[in-house]
Image (cartoon, rainbow, N blue to C red; front, side, top):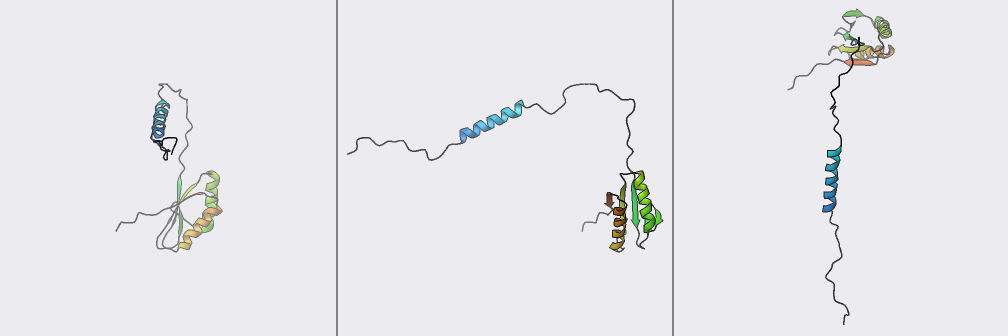
Length: 137
């Protein structure tokens, strides 16, 4: 015979996280509302300067290798040695020298690689390769 009655209470086998999620969402909404917006809401008149330093945009130099393998710098035909000397001079004048290499699609790839090697030798770091957009088939 039992001296105590059976309890109708069950052990809690699962944790109800719904109130915890509600609390997290309420805190998130409060945080969003109380955070100051990143807009400038003050009307102020900024002072003006007599002159503003104007940086001239860097001129882009084009190196073209045609289908005969001839090298042109800005439409002036040059040999590889002349191109290297000219690039070094341009680099001395403008440390931020920009060069775009345009190679004919029918030339040997080695000609374009030779031009890229010359650019590395002249310490030109801003180099682009010109291409055309292919037609979608």
